[in-house]
Structure formats: C-alpha cells, structure tokens
Length: 358
Image (cartoon, rainbow, N blue to C red; front, side, top):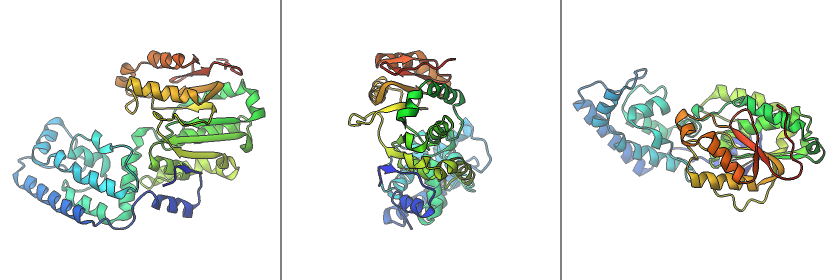
C-alpha cells in the first residue's frame, strides 16, 4: 500500500491503486460462510418469536421498536461477523471502526444498506462475500459517508480569509508557497487550496500542496476523485478538479498517509496549514491528543505562516471544546490569534507575518 499518492484521472492507474487497497474476487472463506449460516439461524429464530414486525425499508426507527429488535435480533450478535468481513476485505488494518457508532441492526440497515428489502442479515452478508463491485461500494459507504463533510465550498468565509491573507503576502508569489491540508478527508479542501492559489496568481511551479489522512480510502478518493458508492458525487468532484489536472497544478499536489497525533519525525515546513473538522470534534477532542496534534502542526509551520481550523461540529462538541479553549492552545504554541471568519486560526510569530484587513 502506497503511503503517498499523486493525483490522477487515469482509469488504469486508479484501478491498480484500488486493487492494492481492497481484496478482489469472492470472499468465500470458510469462517465467513459459517458466519453467514449463523446469521440465517439467528434471523429464523427472531422471525418465529418476535411479536412485532421486523424492520422494513422506509419505516422510522423509534425507541420502542429498537428495543424490541434488540431483544430478538441483537446487534451484538450480528456486528462481529460484519467486522470480520471488513477486516478480510481490506489489505491494511482499518484506521477506524464505523460500526462502533451504530446502536442497532435497524440503524445499520438504514445507514449502510440502502435498498435492502429484508431485515435478514444473511442475504446482505452473502452478497458482500461474493459480489466484489457491491462490496467495494459498501466499503466506501462505510468509510466515506456523506455526513463527514465531503463537499466543496464547506467553509467559504475561511477561504475568503485565506484569499485576503495571500494578498498581504506578495513575498510568497516570489518564492513560492507550500501548503498542508491536515486531516484532509476526501480532499475537497486540498483541491480548493489549489484552486485558490491559481486564482491568486500563483503558477504551478510556485505551489506545493499536500493533503494528509490516516484513512487509505480517503486518500485514494482524494487523489482520483473516485466515489464508487456515489456516482453523482464522483462526476461533480472530477468536474471541479479537471482544470487543475489539465493546467499542471495537480502535478504539484500529493496525498500522504499520516497520524496527526504522531508527526514528530516530519521535517517539512509549510507556509499555510489547513486542518478542518478535526480539532475539538468527535475525532480529536481529548486534551492530551489535541495538544499533541496542535503542537505537531505548529512545529511544521514556517515563521509568519498561517494555520486555520474550521469547526462545523455538533453543538455538544462546541460546548465540550469551546473556541476560546482551542485558541488558547494555539496561543500557547506561539500563534498570534486572528479572526478567520470560521473556526480558529492565526500566524506563527516571526518574520514575514502579515495581517489581512477585515
């Protein structure tokens, strides 16, 4: 598995890279077949004894109904088989467990099995074993769901702030700019940085942009604009990035795998670091983890460089890690706090700092 991917819209390269991430062909492994049989028996028992109707497409999942389903078709007896299937489908250790956020079998069906016509887990499980194309789309649905903020134009005020900041840094036009989109997810923000640099007058040779994530499927999607589970999203994504590919900006971009909480060995320094949707949210909110991640990011910033982190989190996360606390963490690392329009951010104290007008 490559730790670094250069962007490309070449179909052959995209297919080869995906095969290095996902297991091909039929997963008819003996243990998985036994699990399918046990799921069938579990459902047969539930169907014979459950006094209430089981899940069906389009039905709202209410608390009482969830409790009844858990009694007769418990999620804890289903989820180990799907976790085992996931581990045997990937050629790398899963970076996260999306099924840990699912409270019951009906919620799983509602979120991760659209179009399923039965509450019986065995037919879905068997199809995932034998249908490679279906399994591929399902894995992308698990690890790249739409609710993870995968869309362009998510933080317009932040991008406008960066535009003004670049206008106050003409020195970067002379020497070139190096950017990092940390925790880039499916890469929309990384490509938006490239588009912004082009609009601000940078030529391809004057720009270096890196997107980083811990999830190989996210990096693959970002590098190739590939979303097997969502053809409409794939068409829109490729439409947006094609001008950058055709004008050479994509040749100055790379997507790498890294853990932001452990970047002590990185020696690369950047003029601009973007880290949206991570610091203070469900993925990174513990004080020790946040401090290590922020310290690591600031160490990778050149003096006078800009770091910004947007925070479109659920209100509960915003209360747990308020903006002021996150700004104080940046300040302790030597960052002069600026009003960025969305989230938090500022410049690393040192020569070359410029303050965008508001």
